[in-house]
Image (cartoon, rainbow, N blue to C red):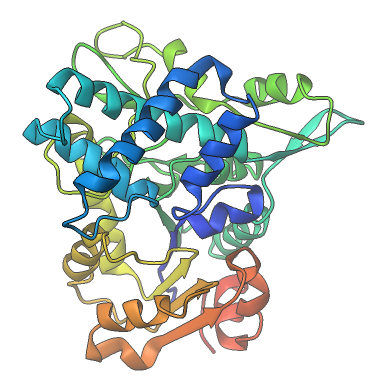
Length: 371
């Protein structure tokens, strides 16, 4: 009988493509600023870094990690809600909240590399994602059209989105209650190509066309190019209001803050819970389950309530500090602890590790059935 497979992706899944991890994100942003690569948004980058220097003394009473982009993003977001952040005024806090988003967007835009074949001017997906989408394509083909795989990701970048498009796999972000027919791509913290209508506040996606991708590729004289997806948002009109979307991407930190940004993702989260509830195989790739991310812990606990029998819960992560496996063991209940496996190593090479398990490899490539 066909088994539902849910892939959960974190920052480690984009590392091979050049994406920074949460712990190195701010270092990458500093390097880009120093190299002059973000000169047009220099003020935003400098505003964030000046605030971090100023706030290290303010947060000496707490364990807030000011070297982790998600912690900083969440702190600035919460500060906007309560109107308090050290000696900053309400207006200055609003500027910081805007600037941290600019920093995140531009750092990802400048870091994620797409392959460019100069001979025929073709654009290929980032390294690592081609293996995943080819695997998904084989599963879908052998399952006679039944979509057995769904994707949950905490990443803002569009590396996976483009890889699916390049492989000819339609995807559905599930921003609307009525889910479409494509492979579900659930971006739990938002996306660089999602914008919001300034009038009705509806969140919509600016889907990249292959023509747009090739336009960016043509502008590169090297074997790689960057894909600034956020630039496409302002070209999209709201279907309800016929006005252009706001140019600021819809991205949110992993908090429970009740802002418009979070409310716009409610249906994505609901669908993620449904997918987890139906999953018989959960495969996490490059997601370190940080202690600060209570969001996924609750989503997993509530989402996995259901009749589906979990056969495998597998995690692929470098786990350089040796703590990620223990975090996952605390997450899972006794009912599936024997189904849990942790693979320490390069998350981008998870397909190689999958091949070592003959049963799951057959499940993934031969009509998703166990022998």
